[in-house]
Figure (spheres, rainbow, N blue to C red):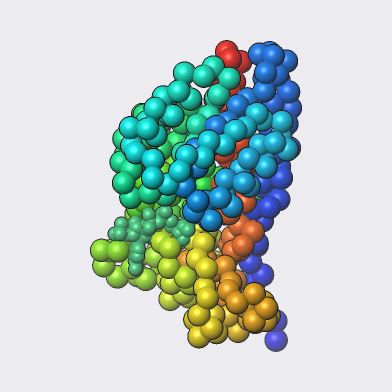
Amino acid sequence: MVNLKFVPQILDGNRVRDEIKAECRPRVDRVIDHAGRPPGLAVVLVGENPASQVYVRSKTKTAGELGIYNETIAPPANISTDQLLAIVRELNERPEIDGILVQLPLPKQIDEARILLAVAPEKDVDGFHPCNVGLLATGRPGLRPCTPAGIIELLKRYQIPMAGRHAVVVGRSNIVGKPMSMLLLQENATVTICHSRTHDLPGVCRTADILVAAIGRAAMITADFMRAGAVVIDVGMNRVTDRGEAERIFSDARLADFEKRGSLLVGDVNPQDMARVSSAYTPVPGGVGPLTIAMLMRNTIESAERRTGLC
Ligand code: NDP
């Protein structure tokens, strides 16, 4: 009997990240030739959150590899909103800084919205300022949030058509879900946004040609949420430390990894169901994760090009 089961395509975020980084290098050189200085990125890291420290180190390391000037400003965790505002305003004034990134989350006493609003929109390489959100919503050029912009790059580079297809985005955060939906709409997808109050989430998800999960719940999206042949993008990054949960999610070789490390990184989608039911999917790790930093670099270079009159 002929086996009709198709093999899904793995959407390799590491490969796309490397392509984007390779494209960044000559653009950095062009900025240096034109402006006599490299693009500049300032990262503000408040306090000593270990996860944030890891993220910031990867960002500045990648910037360094690409020849982007970078510096990290690391005020203590007890800094006040006013003191942090003063740091951001000073960075706004510095001509050699093209991108400002305030690493989230901020300590509880800080008014996060006020800080994000204080970043000059033309230096807002995270794309979180309401000005850039408005530019995105109205379909005009501007700095786009890195994770969803990276997903669009991935889909384009794998030639996955978006126009006219039904995209279902689970999650409505300002960082991922909402901008993802806007960007898919801009690519002429028909977009449905779901969240914790959506009725019959599995039923809605099963109508998706492209399903994006940005929820923050390990392996919540199972085969019951997927139409056979859908493209599945798993944004989630959840660390599972409970053995029982790891066993529920994995029945394969990765359980041995759990034994070795005592934890596993799991997306929002059940990895085995995704590999069995989808036509293409992003693995965790190695799918969406690598794209975010690459897009941050691209945003920093774009900002430098605009600020130095190159485009
Ligand atoms: P948020 O917590 O800000 O948002 C989660 C969203 O999921 C909310 O809109 C929430 O709905 C929705 N949600 C939560 N539970 C359910 C449920 N049971 N059913 C339906 N919807 C639900 O998370 P983020 O958007 O910041 O991040 C989402 C995931 O993506 C996380 O795992 C995060 O680690 C990961 N991430 C990965 C990045 C990468 O580079 N790969 C970058 C950024 C995030 P409601 O609004 O109703 O509460």
